Image 1 (cartoon, rainbow, N blue to C red):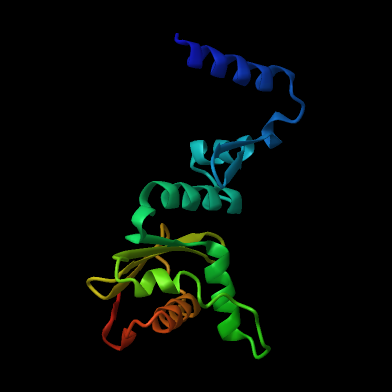
Image 2: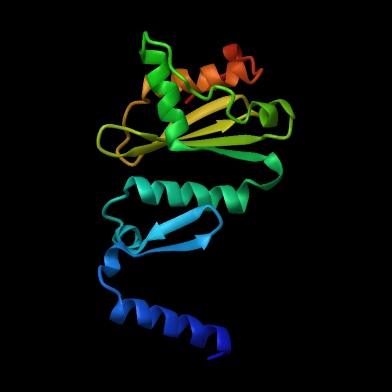
Length: 168
């Protein structure tokens, strides 16, 4: 082992053997991402994905693939706010301007969004170049229309003419 591995091993051993409530212990893996040990075990078992795990995945994707503005990753809470705004008669304070300047820059090629559905999550892939919005989930569910309408609204506000776009 090298020095870094030894330091990590001692750190992990200390946490596992001496810290109370280890499953709720949080650690920072990269800037803007703090994750709980409990959530990692869900991902390992592939049995359940909770809000914190989704946030962690979106943060990792943004950090690894979002540089340079070519790919955007819509945070689930932003999309949820858009959806609720379309359904509400009351004035809402929703960030419809989210990344609009980046969209107008002409650099963006793809946008990804994770949408919460009744009992699970689905994903949208928006291909700016091909002018297509695709949806998929592990249960082969119907596209959540309110989420699709919200994405189309956001694209329109970001100066995209969505009239000729395909939805799959």
